Length: 476
Ligand code: G6P
Image (cartoon, rainbow, N blue to C red):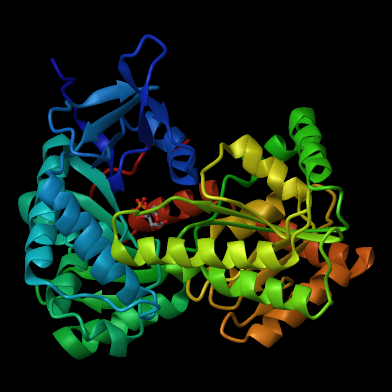
């Protein structure tokens, strides 16, 4: 019998916070996925009989709710066609590029939209079924923007929050969406809508005023039914203490030394770690590095670029093409400049556990984060948290949300390849005092504003809006 769930706090996200694994005896099992979101929410979830609703990945359709590590997990099944139309299609072929400033061209297909509506409804129904009376439900990200309104229709007693992890586009771009009104109405089902940056919240409020005609005042939207919705910025962060603690482990320090050793102990290790995504600017940063080698500003043996690209959305066309382009570029640069035992670029298309990431962060002299557009970029913050001795340098795109907090990074415009080359050189040649001054300030910011604080702030603000009388969540 599946557990009967009646949760006071329900998280609704496209993905469950666990990965499917095969146990030693060959039976299927689950392993906690390492995201910061789940670690931040775990204590408050436990204190409030929390439940997490999400897609377990794949097309396994007969999964019942289960308890893993004390958390109630409620899988939402997707059929093969829904994976294509809802996940790969509307979520990642339409919304993802549209919300990232058209870095790639979004495609608009009516059957993708129909699947988006149907799957959002399934998530909303599942949330309605497991939420206790007057519960708080927190819906996450662009895959589920219709859930707040659908859920409110089913369960008007609930307090509903929504958080968008990716950028919200300028109004001119959002207007291209044939279903723009439905998306706005979907989001307005929430009491509190959170964005990464104040500019994104302002874009949203302006659109609602212009397109839907609701009255707005600063960050408040007044609906004709008397409800008030608030749209505001809550910049997300990482489990900063967790990363710091990991980086301080002797095993991680030893692994960092081993990594440098196996790279031939160069003077400068540049590092990029990204999901293999066209928004991340991986190609342009490797090109910049290649040009610096060609011009003799950097030389193989003295400098190496380590690029980790985590496989992602591999069945979507644009991602396949990107992988080929990067394979080709890495091959060319290594072919032109590499020597036996010293490649110019050490390129890994795979994902690594947190320990290995922390070791890479410790091993890197210059972390290179150059997205064309990024909601926040947590890799930049993880690097900062792992620099225990205030050394190392961060080269960061102005178009990552993190740039609003990490002002002391070497900020670059990823469209300006000469500017990026100059920043890579400057960062690699900066003296220890300069690096320490910058890193110290960034570490203070990241250590103080961690993901726990982000979650607490959002949930406590959520309990203040809406003007209804749900009991507050139990604090931890
Ligand atoms: C971004 C999105 C998340 C998403 C993640 C991984 O961070 O904001 O919602 O889960 O990418 O992408 P995937 O398509 O594998 O879930």
